[in-house]
Length: 324
Ligand code: PBG
Image 1 (cartoon, helix red, strand yellow):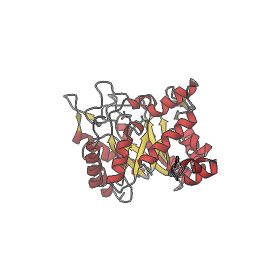
Image 2: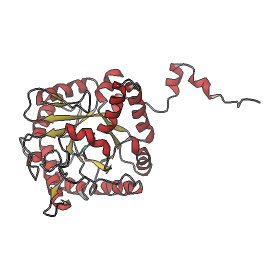
Image 3: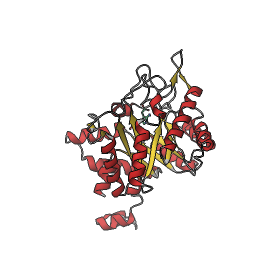
């Protein structure tokens, strides 16, 4: 026998055959669209480093979410860019803060047809650009920050958020938020914990979109070291123990091993965030004509599914939903 009995190419002959035997697929049901809403602008502002992504006005955000909803995208993640920033990020939990207004509008627009997720963090709202309260020594104060996250979560839930997503990587943030939500009657509001969020250089374009680059230092004192994989399992275990309903790994492609390990070790839904830098790299190379952007994007999302994520936050959500 020159050939083995089982010839794998038999099942690759036609597109229909390949479709039938595909182990994984990306569907519109997997997608969560991250969206930015900015206070004090009259027209949407393009984000230079993220072609196709804009900072929305309240009105354009409403239209975008309506379109995503009509395309069948099940969720969005809202980020706010306030007109006024200060040391404590007071706009983050103001009743008339940019995100709270957006949540009320969107709830009104789509009802329960789409899941409104919201980022619970301070970097978009602080003048220093850090994700928490900065102490006199210039450190991000963990426990002072927890109080802020708890208050923000309540303001967001009051405004109609379906899911609170703490992204600041403070220790104990999930239990602080869970307790605050429960005390204020938001017992049915789930938490999607950014459980394993790495201190990644791939967030660069996001910091343009959210205008939140740290004004001094970096985020390595709270976000995870890219050198560590086992530590991600500890982060996830703690967040699940503290009451996280779902967990997220971020970024995605450079951390597929972490996604796979978390998927294998835990039974909560796992999300992965295909972040701004991952999107920008595909878009930039495609614009230069060096790669087929749409094909590469699909390959990225498939890899993330194969690794074990059941939800993917991606700036490709709209493009994908339209193409699918
Ligand atoms: C922090 C936050 C960041 C992102 C999501 N939430 C930025 C950061 O940690 O610096 C990055 C997302 C992306 O790059 O697409 N609120």
